[in-house]
Amino acid sequence: MFEVLTPLAPDPILGLSVAYNEDSHPQKIDLGVGVYKDEQGNTPILKAVAKAQQKLLASEKSKTYISPQGHQGYIDGMLTLLLSNKSKALLSNRVAAVQAPGGCGALRILAELIARANKEARVWVSDPTWANHIPLIGSAGLAIETYPYFDKDTASINFDAMISTLRQCKKGDVVLLHGCCHNPTGADLTNAQWDEVLQVAKEREFLPFLDVAYLGFGDGLDEDAYGIRLLTDNLPEVLIAASCSKNFGLYRERVGLAAIVTRDTASSRIVQGQIQSVARGIYSMPPSYGGALVDMILNDEQLKHEWVTEVDEMRERMKSLRAMLVDQLAANGADRDFSFVNKQKGMFSFLCITPEQVREIRANHSVYFVESSRVNIAGINQSNVEALAKALVAVVK
Ligand code: PMP
Image (tube, rainbow, N blue to C red; front, side, top):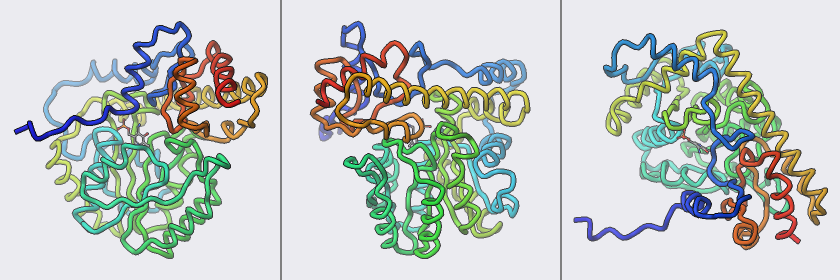
């Protein structure tokens, strides 16, 4: 049967990791895969998570299935974190939600839900967007279109082009927006730009689909939720796929949330049943462990406080790495002004150099990142920043 299958091209990011591991250069630098790293280059278990693990070990009495929607304490904690306890949608019982296996699981089941409601729906994604959006949404059979987003020449969002494309959306179209910390560019909408997106969503009656994978990594947990709260407070329907991989450091535990703001309580009950049935057709029940940990953290004042402090530390560290890189580039005589890196948010930045320059920096300086010029800011540290800046200056000149 499988003789008809042909080999696939290797995944560019995973291929990069292999090449990095095989490189014997003593000062090689890995800015590829999107995981947070500390100053020593490790991705540690957060202290709040380690404490929750101890509590869970002591209290968990069974490994029987959890309920199909997941841990209710997890769902409620996450919804409050994302939408706030003043959320109109939450207060009027208009939100359906399930714990999903990672942000990817959430994206996939929401795509399937859209397809159940309207097979013809088009999903608009930013140009560029996170590469995995295409298979996750496309696998549900939905057509994908792109709206202009980032302009490499100006190293900023081309908001006029974005809005004029969104103005062409039809009722029933779905528009995927990164809630914060845009992957891959690091370029986020300002609050005023979110306000404009809301106006266009109202005019054109498109359905916003928010992907929230880096809450807290931009300006703060509440600050980063501006767009999410604005849209969910002011529109009848919104989709949200959230991930706890980065801000809780729970990558391998696969913890995400698929949430749907609906028109009224009756539709929310129907959507809740539908989304559970979608999940049942793919993986049946969500994994328990990671959701149980987040439930414990978000619903315990002390643990939550510790977790918020750790998110603040990760964010502030990444901000200071941006500043260090920009300073080092200037100090080493960069021809170009890289100060746009300081304005970008979250874990990623587009350095706006060419694919040829990316290949050159890899071949000649053992610095690894993808050809789009996306770098993982958390891969920078005090001991590699100068070498990185010098390598960049050498290839950009
Ligand atoms: N959305 C975006 C934009 C992401 O970058 C990621 C993680 N790389 C995800 C969703 C999903 O992550 P996960 O499935 O690991 O939670």
